[in-house]
Amino acid sequence: MSSGRTHDRITLISLPILTGISLLLTRNAELTLWMAGSFLFGGLMFGPDLDIHSNQSIRWGWLRWMWQPYRQAVPHRSALSHGPIIGTICRLLYVGLWVILLALLYQSACYFLKWPMWNEVQLWKTTQQFVIKHYSILLSIFVGLEVGSMSHYSADFLSSLSKKIFAEKKSVNPLRFETLNGQDPVRANNSKPRSSRKSRHRRKT
Ligand SMILES: [Zn+2]
Image 1 (cartoon, rainbow, N blue to C red):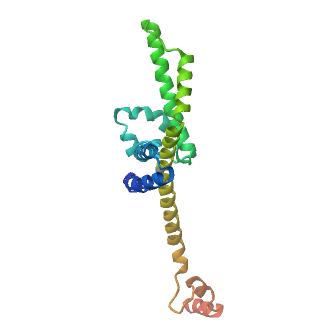
Image 2: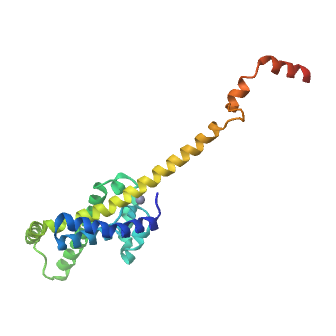
Image 3: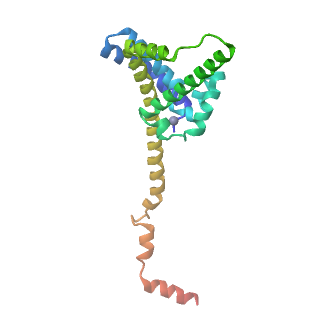
C-alpha cells in the first residue's frame, strides 16, 4: 500500500494533466473546473482511505468524527471503499445519509420550536429540478471524484503488486543457489555414491 504522501503527490502531479485532457474533451472551462476541483477533493479528502485514520480523514478537521461509523462499518481496502465506482458511490451515499439525518433533526427542532417547516413534496420537486438542470455539472463532479479515487486504487494496486513480486523473488532466490561447479547443492549432495557414504560411516565406527 502506498503512503499518504505518495497518494497526495500523485493527485497533485495528475491535476494539470487531467485538467488538460478534460479541456480537450469537453471544450468547456466550467465543467473542467468542476471536474478538476472534485478530482483534487477526491484525491486529498474524499478518497478510499477514509476507511482508516489517514491524512484524508484528518483533513476533515472537526468534521472528521462523521467518518468514524464509516471506519467501523467498512473494512480497510474492501470493495466498499477501494472498489472502482462502487467506492465513490458508497461514500456519496454515506454523506447523503448524514445530510438526511441532519435534515430530520432540523425538521424535528422546527416542529418543537414551532418554526416554519419544510414542505417535503416541494423539497423533493426542487431537488429533482436541480438535478435535471445541473446534470452535466453533477456528472463532472462524479467523474472528478471517481478519477481522484482511481488514482488511489491504481497506486495501491501497483504498490501491492511490486511488493508481491519482490517477496516472491526473495523466496525463490535460495533455491537458485548453485555450487561452484554449477550444480544444485541439494542435488549434488543426493547424487553422491552410496558406497562412499557407507565407507565414511565405517571409518567412524
Ligand atoms: Zn488505500
